[in-house]
Image (tube, rainbow over all chains, first blue to last red; front, side, top):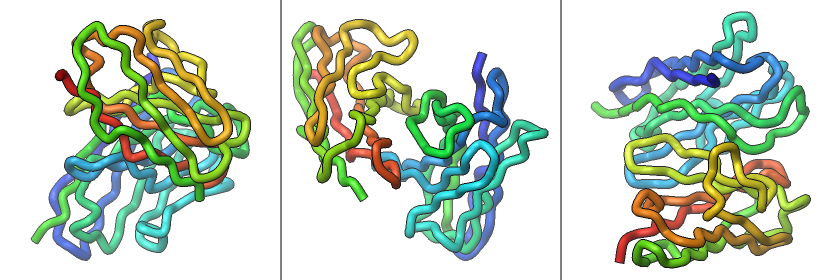
Length: 123
Length: 108
């Protein structure tokens, strides 16, 4: 059974940092691109970071570029999101999602999602 | 960047009725690389459709997808009570991936 479990969320002051983790199981993690997608309260979905299966490519939208960093440890089947210089507008549920593509140099769609971890940025 | 516009924002229907959700792209989505997700309150999104018209594993056949180019549609043939939730489209034909703003299907 494919499983993604996020952790590391919490309450942090503006300007602070957090590191999210996503433990993957039930599929060949090293063969799939991965994504972090967030959802602010009452809002839609926003992809905030993606990484190809081998880490050779990473994507960030302008809203987080230079502040967030995605990484993966294929030996531990774990995805990470380092979030620095956090702002109030970063408050959201952060989901880890598996990309359907296998050993692809391209991002496809997200076929499995974790339950999410909540990040609240507030003083 | 391809902008996806979903309409209507809210769709008010009764159980048993047919729902038609639209996702319009600002540019042509190559290879019909369009996916649909369903999100229930307090839950993560779930993949419904990919490639515009292929159902994901375990998705009931009352859900169907169609379209190409810039116009895509998700149809729910007969609404069940659990279908009254939010739906998102996402294109993966061009970088960067983008999501639509969502359509909420509510009980009339």
